[in-house]
Image (cartoon, rainbow, N blue to C red; front, top):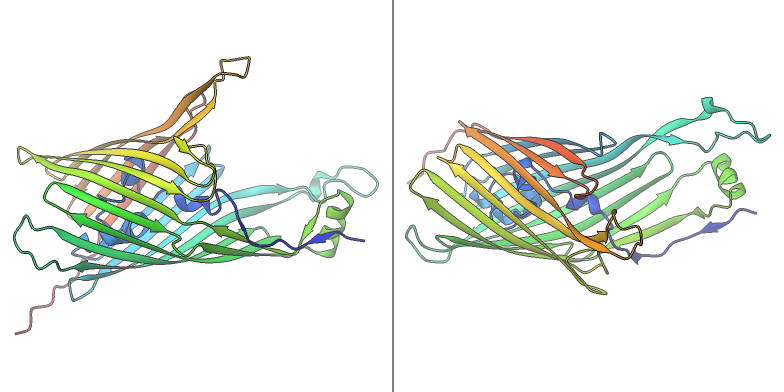
Amino acid sequence: MLAYYQGIGQARTYVNEFLNLGAGARGLAMGTAQVAVTDNVTSGYWNPAGLTQLDAPQLSLMHAAYFSGIGNYDFASAAFPLSSQHDVLGVTLLRFAVDDIPNTLYLVNPDGSVNYDQVTTFSAADYALLCSYARNIPLNQTGDDAPTLQVGGNVKIIHRVVGSFASSWGFGLDAGLQYRLPHWIFGLMLKDITTTFNAWTFHFTDAEKQILFLTENDIPVKSTEITMPQLIPAVAWDMQIRQKWHVLIETDIAVTTDGKRNTLISGKKISLDPRMGLELSYRQMVFVRAGISHLQRTQDDADTTGRHQIWISQPAVGAGFQVKGFQLSYAFTNLANQSQPLYSHIFSLDIDIPHKKKSAAY
């Protein structure tokens, strides 16, 4: 008799973690500290309120190969200011996948012999669609130094696939805001504000079920994963130096509520993960960026006793160039740690879409 089980909804740590990888080489080079300063089409990912800084439609594309090409991460986003000049719509697509995973279910024949010709491959892929809306809120104050308030939100649809064996659909909501002063920007991003549910279904054939049973594996029927809310407050300092130079410094703190994580401050239910980013620009044409994130405590590889732990982080650097509606950005980031570094080269392209401005009606 086959052993089946039906899972119930569970709030696990690191559910839908592919949505925390980042988007755009600018943000990744700044250590993923973007909630306050984000002001282009990638804001749909970082903080939808930042979309209000666009005065023309914009498109962004990015591809990154993680872990020596084992994982592939693709990002595309587009945003369109509306005629009211206060509202912006955006759409973002994300895909993270590990392809060509060996399927060894049929590797061993019933008689115990091994047949490598029966080994096939499959992909485990995660997809997300974010539909964004942002609006600039009038504060009834005028002048170049007047503060501004922007708000935005996302409706997101998540689809995850593991070969032909399993798939899930999930839905969630995000909300964000930015409050801009002459030299300071305050941001707040609320992810999965109503919690996000992933409902899994499984599609094993009778032959696959038999193999799983003979190898003493449970056969799932369906299950539900829950992504708990995440809060990211941020503050940035924005200063122009001698007309030609411009500097941005931002600090974020990701406050997760899905249980104990390996972060700088980790509690039973709530963990705090700070990050910091820097951007120095010349004439808003040439950019140099750096950042640090993911402070974690881990075992010291040089300690054979297993008693000594050290703090590690994920540093990043990058550069960018902008001219005539095109911005090419590059990030060089460490995805592992100092003792076993695993660096990735990431490029992204932001393009302003030409449009005709409508004349004002009187």
